[in-house]
Length: 402
Ligand code: ACO
Image (spheres, helix red, strand yellow):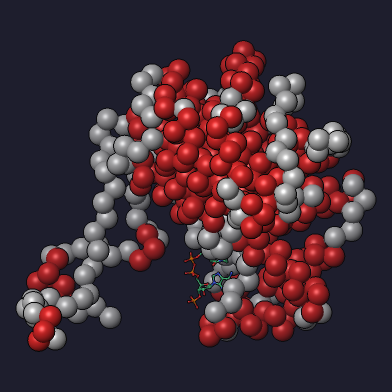
């Protein structure tokens, strides 16, 4: 509870918006969401059309530069990505220090920040060319770092990127090839991973993107800001939910828990548990990304002839939740993380890489938001106020009198 008289005497009047539920922190041209109608658009284009037609690289270009690329722009951008895929030789030594207990998200965040040390020209981009270079370098290298962090944690040699492979295929190569065998992905795997990345490319002022803008507002460079975004994404209420969902589904499956009984636990506030992959700050009807991913998961498992028992558990939970007054009244529906893990599992991505995959996908959105802050001559440093609730007017007590 807030003591208003104390508040006036200490801070004056402050707008307190817990969790920024209704506070706009910026103006942006990147992504539009209508949470009541379940609409998501990147730069005005509906997510359904982008997911259907676009490669991740085209979507990244659209999100960052605000327009659909023509063939020449696409080819040039793809060339830049290819050139920038390898890591600096000295940087590869960092991986030796992590060993098999390294958390891929920790490695990713640290390495993305470290990139600045090996590529000082990204510190102060002076024109559009510098920005395109920095964006391509970051999008390309985050993928190389992600795959290398996986190889490090499983104790296998790092696999280098290949110039002849496209973005998604190159990632799969670095993840799953070994010095003795070349991994050949099926078209279903490439299509599904591409769609996963496209659907994660941006999502307006979520926790990690606001973090990127916050850091960018102090004039920190693109890579440092993205590294902060990765850390913010890690938490289980945000990108880390894609790990938490699979852990939850696995536990229900392994222990044979009745989904209705499980629901009672997540409705009980004392339990401290939630139905992971459900609920959203903005979507109050459905999350269009979840709808697309659910269909894609069915399609993929069928084409690959895979039976995943966790998909059945997820379907059952959704069915129970959608008939439960608790979820209906609070407008809680599956979010992007509820079905995405089923797809990642089918591709063969290990659980500790799930949030890393989200980070690779979200990189264009972070870059686009960083760019907006960077290019706005009137951008002010982010500096929210607080409502102070501590003691006031105390007198210092010498140590021997305490
Ligand atoms: N399970 C059970 N109850 C829930 C859930 C859930 N998943 N989500 C929200 N609620 C309840 C809250 O306890 C609250 O109940 P109350 O009104 O009785 O107090 C009510 O619904 C409103 O929820 P808030 O916590 O106010 O919602 P908020 O907008 O702050 O949080 C969030 C949104 C973090 C996504 C929340 O729904 C949640 O924790 N979901 C589970 C984690 C998750 O899936 N995160 C991924 C989100 S998508 C993304 O970041 C990529």
